[in-house]
Structure formats: structure tokens, C-alpha cells
Length: 188
Image (cartoon, rainbow, N blue to C red; front, side, top):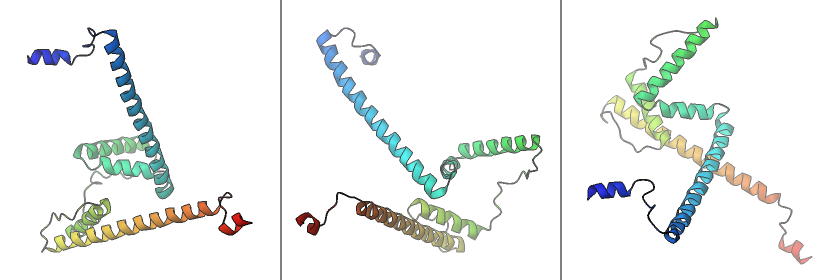
């Protein structure tokens, strides 16, 4: 029985159905395909718009920074970043460009309390919930919490500022509309 279900799911399993049923399936699948295609196009357009905003906010390399940050969140991604940077340093050495070739460039020598603050601030900026990895009574735990609160404050202040800027732009765009008439102008 399990074998017949597996074989029923194979491509072309509806070859034995009649033409009328096949036509119905064709139009059902066509509709689903077009809907998915429209969603894909809308998502691609939204992604492109987000990319433009990132470029306007962070500059030409802002999106590259975000992608590198996301890649660095996994050990595999971080390993790829390190390998790419080493390859780039090697190419620059081949070109005769003097560069820093320290092997311990990725070693974090920051004191633990400063690192805890930085990690907390980053978590706050990401919008993560406060989940302190340190003992909350320790100096590191308190610095993590302080960093998280500072990150949250900066995040919300940035969101509010961005919303105000967008609202101001909408208001300005509305003022430029030549078709907009006041009640007094309509009466005249």
C-alpha cells in the first residue's frame, strides 16, 4: 500500500486520466502558478525597494554589510568570510599592496564586561528579547542588560525618526498635488 502511494506521487502519475479532468487540473495548476509567480514578483519588488532604502540609509556598501553580518552569525559563514578575506589579502600581497597580515586578527581581546555590553547592545538593536547569557548579578550580566536597553532605546528612536521622516515626506508630497483644492477654492 505504501508503495502505491509513493508511485502515485511521481511526476506524470495523472497520464491515465481523461482529457476533461486533465484540462481542469491544467487550469487549477495554471492559476496556482500565476499566483505564486505574482507573489514572487511582489517579493522581488519589495526586496529591491528595501535595498534602495538600505543604500540611501547606509551608503553603497550597506547591503554588503548586512549580508556579511548575517553570514557571520554561523560558524560556517564566519569561516567563509575569513577564507575570503585571506584570499583577498593574498591577492593584495601579490599586487604589492602593503597590508596587515596578522594571523590573530579575529581574536577578540576586548575585556569581558565591554564584550558583554557590545553583545547586549547588538541583541537590543536586533530586537531580541532580553535573554542574558551572563549571571545577572555579575558585572558582565549588568553590562549585557545595560547594552540591551541602550540598543533597544536606539532601535526605537531610529524607528520613530524614520517614521517621522516618512510622514513628513508624505505630507510634503501631498502639498505638491495640484489637483487638491480647498473648500474655498471649490466654491469659487
